[in-house]
Length: 516
Ligand code: ATP
Image (cartoon, rainbow, N blue to C red; front, side, top):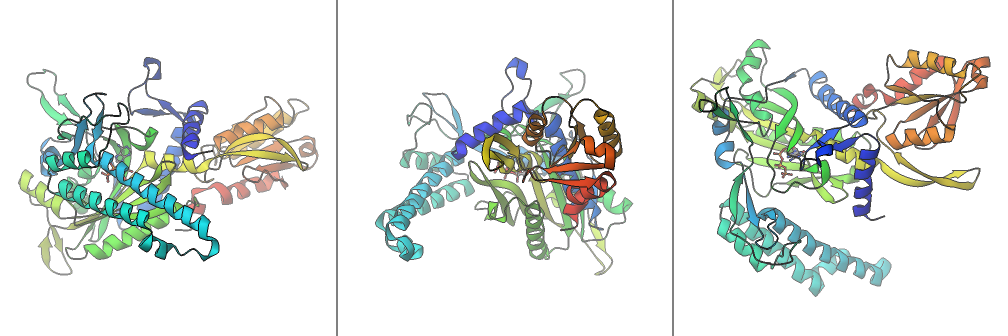
């Protein structure tokens, strides 16, 4: 199965099994907006809890807030979003399709890199064990030619973006002979800047109503509350403020399912520090956040750092943690050293002093900030793409059909266990319900008595339930049940009184947090 096929299957599976639906689907959906179903919302909640507990509960010097989505419009002037939160867009005159100019160029670079990789694979096949990749890269004429092209396009793109030179961006697209994937032509419009913020009106009478924005990031809700939290919480620098909440961006190219949405959710933490100490904290948070991701056990090789070529208007250092999605390594989380840009600007625009008196140095200053910012929806996508698996099932050494299983990390799984009476009679349902009422106080459980036991196992596999507890006739005699493990499909017999402890060790958030 190619990665593209896998991705299509995952989207269909997410819908069929109650994870993710297109928004307002009965009206044919709304572009790049999605709803989470009964399992998707549980998965999302578990991810948010893992983040919140890791940030707020495990750090004495980090507290959490929940600021409003609507903010005073001056906020977005101070933050730079009114002036500079733009994407360069370009239209194809024939297909009338709109693209992000920088994305077209990045895709062009990715194609050149693909060519290089294919050439290297050919070399590897040809030379076998004696293949020396470094030497091959340094000498093969095809690789060298394409590597030179990559370097040139990349440098010109970064220069054009940094200098905000829209004509140069367009020229680069023409020079690279990039065609519209839909019309196949090169008839491009000028490149224009497009602000990503959604506007709306506040107030009852439309003439008097003021324009306000739906927040494009949650961070500003933290900055404007810096003094409130610092004073009321008697916080001493270094300290952090964390927040989870919705953000909205009118993305030009909204593709790739829940990877790029117009309404999405962020988990952001702003860490306030002494000026001059930002690089130390930037490195620490980079490492801490990578550890948090890899702790999920989805393969360390699926994550990597990527340093930003073009720094945002507020940053003096920035990198992404990227995840290997079916469509390549892409940003999952951003870690940014934001200097004192935001607090200083809010001080300027509001006319209110926003400073911290440091009792250790006897100085007042505007703190510097290191930010960690991760998208909940991209995390959901990383978990689901990593989890989706189709496999042949063996029974007594024979092939016994196929199953689709979601190998979701147990602590994040929407349903932790299903309690299944083997048959719908002989007092087994009553016994099973007794077990359910005990376990459901601690774990999200399901009860299912319909269809054969095999079919019920498959249903639980398809939604990623890590354990099935089966109640049979022996249970009535000796108070034991079988536990079936989702990933290995192995079964073990345990006594009912041990169930709670076994589950706790395997599926609780504590098992994840303890490893951080
Ligand atoms: P990109 O380069 O992919 O547009 P970004 O660099 O603009 O992302 P940030 O502003 O750093 O993203 O936002 C922090 C995080 O919020 C991202 O790492 C991502 O996980 C999430 N995020 C940003 N935009 C979207 C979106 N449109 N849909 C879903 N998640 C998003």
